[in-house]
Length: 557
Image 1 (cartoon, helix red, strand yellow):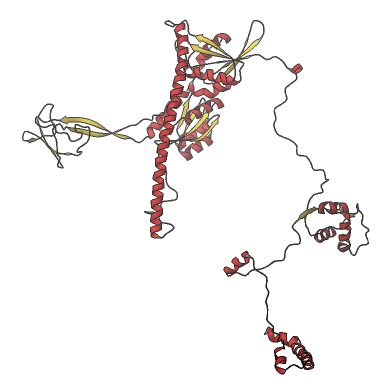
Image 2: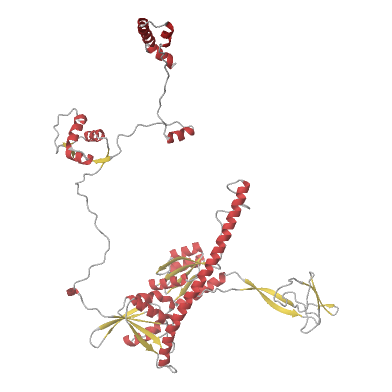
């Protein structure tokens, strides 16, 4: 088709004829033969050549999937510049990063209908002209605020430490002395002697459970502030705060007890707070007390603590290595199961396997024994101490201990409502329960426990945990049977292993069936199943009893 069209449009025949006539004349003039004329004729051949644009790899991949390629024209420009209202010519030049002459030339096309004579400081009020200038320059635009506009600075509301006061404004304050030590070593009794009071008689359980502060006026007119800290193991956080808020620590050590666990803990806290320690030995007038022996014991106790700490670290390292072996074994077992399951799926030719057995419910009922508690205390320190004790619970596999809610203050109807929703027990430490809350608790059958001594509250929680532990069966031996010839034992053999366990079919004395047999009397036994006995075996009769189990949780005191 293209060849015919080409021959129709171009004068190839006329060119051929003119060439032949011209060539023939030359040959005739040169007296050549006709055969020579035929061979000198030049033939013109025409071939068609097609050119097209090469496709990119992306276009080829799309065409292989059977989709059509749509080509879009490239965008005018990729650079985006910011514009604002009432820009000047110089502003446009700055944002476009071009000279002013370029802006003048583009304005001739962007603003053809205006007679405005543009200069460097000329303000362009029409935003459409600004946009046209940006487009002609090959860029895109976005609306921004004027750079020279004053932005309101955000006020700094961050809390920062106040600068130290000048020395001229400083005033002397009374020194703070913190009395620390083990429980029942006489700290509060010594302070009662200083302040001429009897606070120790007012403490529940005879132990201090709060931080107390008071001032003592000396004969010189100056005053000293004393802090009384609890010595019980549950109030470690209170002792730590007392050590950080004092100038001097008075460590009280009872001569009859010596250095105890909380004594060492108080020394550690004072050292961490970088506070000097003054040791006060109490109860030296008690009969049978040897001060020298107590001091020697204190030194030996310190040395023993170092040895015990080293041994504890060694045990922890051994435990880590053992745990690593267990973890490695479990990982190997998991990998083996996974590879077996993967091989099974590949053999079946499936990606996923249907779950075996009945479909599990999405919402499953939790049947694990659980004790939910709500803690209400008189002060933050008391609540904190109770929560620290609950953190040491480590028998969740037997009975789960859940802390539902805690707070400071009296028991309210809202606490009772939460306890009813979670089937929880409310423990009130040194706080009362309002009448509406008490009536609501009785109506909703919510257990409400009042305590004013912390170790009694912990004992109550341990009893509640023990009551929720499932009963375990224990054997009660009611008798043993021996034979004059062969000792027969159905429950335990001579190696301590059970060879048979079952019921007796009959028991005979001489020829009579009997239900009981006296001690050291002969009898015959027949079991329901055939039993192979060996010399030395013994028959043990027992009953299975349901026995209450108790928690092994040790809170540390």
